[in-house]
Length: 211
Image (tube, rainbow, N blue to C red):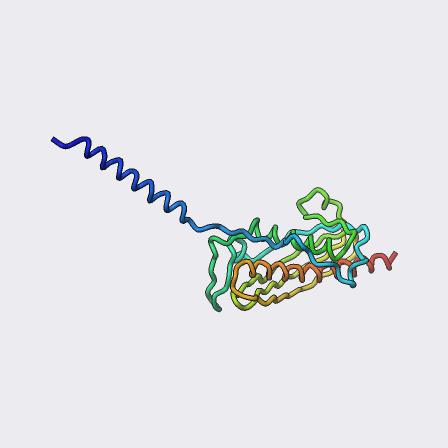
């Protein structure tokens, strides 16, 4: 007749071993890291745009991004035809929202006094100017550089024609660290926002001169 005590002890040991294995698997799960294009510190306004904000109201959005990078993970290029999705390294919110907020932040910095809101916000409903952005390139090559290319439009809500432009910013990388990649992307998007701010200021000055 089987020794039920021994069988019971074996079951307990097996259960305990399985629990340890499961706990070990959970404790060794890779840590997820999240990044943003909106650092706490923002660059000071440039002389060219520092005094052109006035009481202008600006709506930013929509922002469109290529499908290949329109995902939570950071996407890096490993070669001409190879890309990697970094599963444990993700944007803090959808990339389109990250870029829109970064551009809005840049416009606030470059155009002091301007009221800048995202297009989905109630404050954007009666904006004087609407800014739309189409990101055509959002590349990162670890150990080399990130490149952001954008087509954008500054459209006054009056009858004046829109101003359109294209910006390309290449930011060298100090290394292959993913946080450095995010910081370089933030610098590149800030450069795009400076180009847009200059166009907004020019449109505002033109409208003022025409009165």
